[in-house]
Length: 132
Image (cartoon, rainbow, N blue to C red; front, side, top):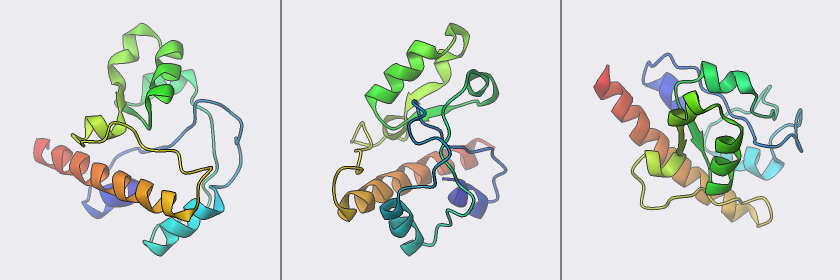
């Protein structure tokens, strides 16, 4: 989404974080990076981090990959900021509600995830462009 927003001339703060710190500080999964690099994305300098309370205050919108992530964030998010939490694909008006977790599958799963994320990102960026 960050690459697509920049290509459209939007100045947005876009970040990615997990709901647990299991992979904190690690680079992206090699299969994910390989799939992304084939599409022209750079993963240089990107490391995993966990969502922190400050994120709920600072970000205007927090998009979750799946219902488990959403539930985890709802449980930790102060009530005043819960309106910011949404399922990523649903927020983008997609027919699919959740981004599947490709971690335990083969490389094809990462391609599907990229397809979904790119389409959802395009839709959200188009909506943001039309509202500015």
